Length: 464
Image 1 (tube, rainbow, N blue to C red):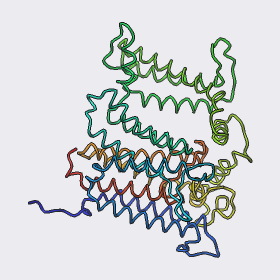
Image 2 (image 1 turned 60 degrees about the horizontal axis):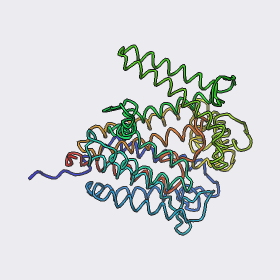
Image 3 (image 1 turned 60 degrees about the vertical axis):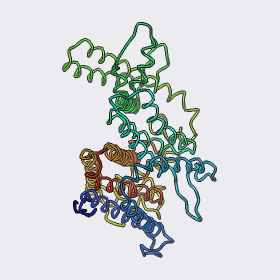
Image 4 (image 1 turned 90 degrees about the vertical axis):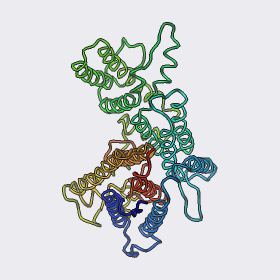
């Protein structure tokens, strides 16, 4: 009988150490930004940093518990865990609104945010489902089931409404694509209904997810460049983003030329043409939505998107937060002002509202400057690369899918939160992992990481 080896010896120490360093950096930043001379102790629970320290201790304790549980439990109980979080997402809709959203379930003077834990349960169930099917023999049922696993919590979260968490859930689409689960069966079911048309596969369906996100990204960028208006009187539909449309056509044309240099077959040329047409239509459609489709959004959501796209300016009003955040980041310079010397972004000055939550990157950047930002980016990048390496070395499909889910969730949070702070993304309320003040996000991120560490520590014992 093989001697049982300790879990500690199989722990991925590089990921664990980077995770602990992130917690330390986040805690010290929060202590600095919320520091009060009358309450200097970091253990003072009447202050934000005292409460955050408690949340970190609780989160590490919960992380230790999930690490001690056998990894097979997460596979076997993925559906009950998912069902329980859905139940909480329904319950929270009947709670009193806080800051315009029903996202918290109150417990005494505190509260939890079920949407944060729904990320974990959705990742677990998605990993379980994908590991139970043959991706090579996928059909409409398998694609719809995987999509439903994502869409149900997304719909409940949108009802709160919580646009930030809703956007984070789209990260799971990339995981589905990575595992080969595409929308090809659905597209084929419609295409093959056309008389005389019979396809076994479609290029658009197989690459639908990356095509969609690339077009969204380029379309938003081109809309940001829309400072000049041209009259396209010959177009049968209204287009406001004329420069955006032209830029997108040029970008996709260049990509198509590069693509055609490698593939000379007529079939590949037609794909390049499809790319150009899709880019044109998508950007034109997005421009139309920007002009005419905002009426269905909440007023504050409409304001944030319009301000982000530069459709109007209000630097001292509704765009105050973003402008002050960019000013705080820029004031750090090369080396920063020094620890506990942030003047623009401190809680006391209140020049940057929510500097302890959504905009906590601002005080860090102001204190440590470009050098500190480079270190933070390097640490996050190291963590993400390490998670990818962990995912690729798994023998279990369940473990691999879950690892990629964790990596994509962290990437979304990091990219969007930093983008909010430097004006590259609209303000949609996404916390910076391990930094932002809040118990629910801290607990969910810690539990997420410890589950990953546990699955990886037992990777040799699981085949699927």
